[in-house]
Amino acid sequence: MRHPRTHAWQAAAGIVAGGAALAGVRTAAGRPVLSAPTLAAAGAGTVAGGIMVYEWLTPRSWLYGPVFWHARTQERVVALTFDDGPCHPYTEQLLEILAREGVRATFFQIGNNVRREPNLAAEVASRNVVANHTYDHPHLVWSRPGTVREQLQRGQEAIHDATGTLPHLFRVPHGWYGPQVISTAEELGFRCVGWSVMAWDWDRQPSDVIERRILHGLRPGGVSLLHDGQDTDAFPKADRSHTVAAVPHIIHTLKANGFGFATLPELMDLDAQDSRP
Image (cartoon, rainbow, N blue to C red; front, side, top):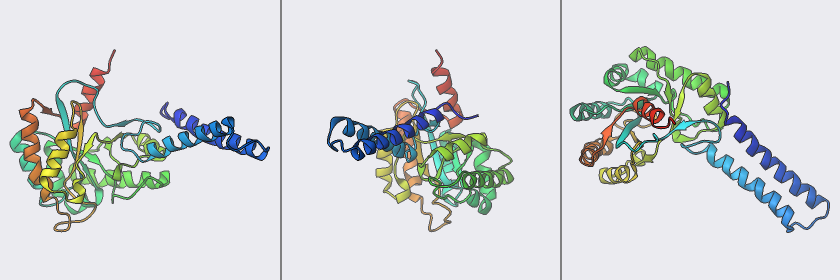
């Protein structure tokens, strides 16, 4: 069953096609290119096209289907999420920090990395929430539905083999959602997830920069994105030491400001409760 927003992007596509066609017909008929009706038709098509492209490439997509990126709540609670693991030794170090602080997080794992580190993946799943981040972290934004399906299923198999769990959350690599990605994920029973703040730590930013960006961007119900791995690379190339150094300070500062922590499923439940009439 397709999500109701399918009709929204089809309507936008219709505006693009209709605007371009009307402008073309008027121009071919000898009407002035700079006339108000021609410009209006071309402008409407351009705006609709721009919205479609933007929503195709955003981690907060709404046009093509639901992407959860924050909870609608005033409760001071946030979710910590980590992408691209498991990766020794950084995932272990983060697990130690989280356990010490009494915080549970959500880890979006890459199937190829899970195959390499099955015991570490199982350790993550023993206390935290594990989610699907494809099998080998490709750009899916222009991929066919069959490719999306294969990536999700292979990632799911790897995670299940290592942890015994079947994730129901999915985050697309690079945050680039499109209609075929969202619809295929939904057909497989996944909820698509984005984020409300990212520290760009994948680019090995200094720990103080990572900390400042996360703390500046988080609000009640927010979802932060950090990384415990790097694509499908292994140690030592996948250096996440700066992220590991920043996390304790992030947690301590948020706690000092009255924030609590939730896994993504818990945050989604909170969002569902607070959005009821």
